[in-house]
Image 1 (cartoon, rainbow, N blue to C red):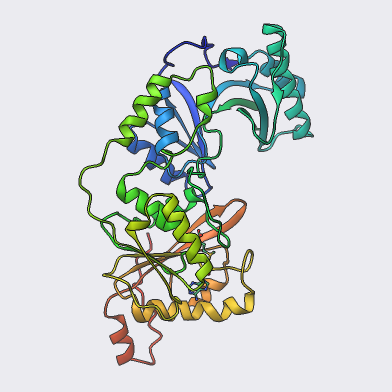
Image 2 (image 1 turned 135 degrees about the horizontal axis):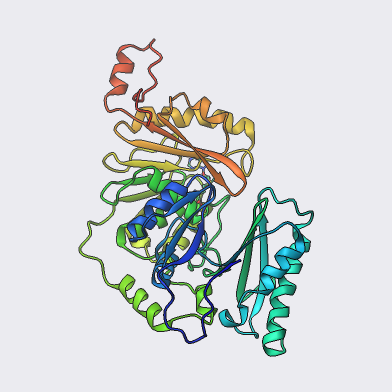
Length: 413
Ligand SMILES: C[S@@+](CC[C@H](N)C(=O)[O-])C[C@H]1O[C@@H](n2cnc3c(N)ncnc32)[C@H](O)[C@@H]1O
């Protein structure tokens, strides 16, 4: 079995070759790989659902603090081939858990699997918990307690058909929990999904951004923090702070680097609107909690009649869809009007609509230049790109009978 090197609690640094795995929403793996490369991580390895990488604890702290797309960062502490439950128990019991966290820690074990022949994941979860406790008892005569609601330390195991890999979670709460208090509007997006969509849209902080259905303002908060250079994790705690291998001095240094005021950046042009005043109140509260309210223009407006708030840039929206909100017949009436609004008032913009509804976007009357599959939890969604061409309306008026879609064609990438 491969085991991460055992380290005494006061070992200051890990090897630069520790293995980590960062899960992310499915469909954002390439976006996460690009982000990790921007952090200086060499050869990140994309697999469905996340990205593996080798790095130091400094890299691990930086990814936790800076990544907008990762859901967690897991530190690989062991790996084994298995055939039966007992193989996994034996492998887990051989790991150096008492070197990695204190016996008084409250623990939780999570197991996920793809193609495992084992009959019960619940049972194997208990067996791994037993193995960890037995290892502690042998080492110090005591065992850690379990707390599935508020654990100090999360242990993950991932099983394939014949491999079991053990991890310690260095993030604690999922990384899309940015630390700011959050007013939940209807059907809010997870922050890392919103940030990943901004990346897929190719939005840059020097371009205007408009979310005309902003709800709780998730796209706007992410965009504002990106433009202002605010690290997403600066206001929260992390699981690695509870591990015995935690290097407080290194973490202080990594945080200090992230807090260094960015160079003069252009003031971002960020605009949001929503038809619902309650949603706008939630957006205002969330933007304030994220420290960016002063950088975002908000107003109450209906997307079907709203004027473009500024020069052309990126329009991004997550319209209501049947699964979580709105009734389907109402949405069928709304979607063609969204298409008309884009055609009539957003010439020159790149528009991105994110939806789980594969049918309703067809009603919009525009040809998407790109459709990117993404998952919102287990819900399969698409990000539809529409490039609105300046001057299209005039052509369309001149040739009223033509079915001109109001978008460039042949821009699929
Ligand atoms: C799925 S939610 C958006 C959630 C948002 N992306 C977030 O993360 O919080 C859809 C939003 O569209 C708004 N909406 C529905 N119809 C609208 C319209 N005609 N004009 C503007 N906003 C509308 C709803 O009030 C709701 O806040």
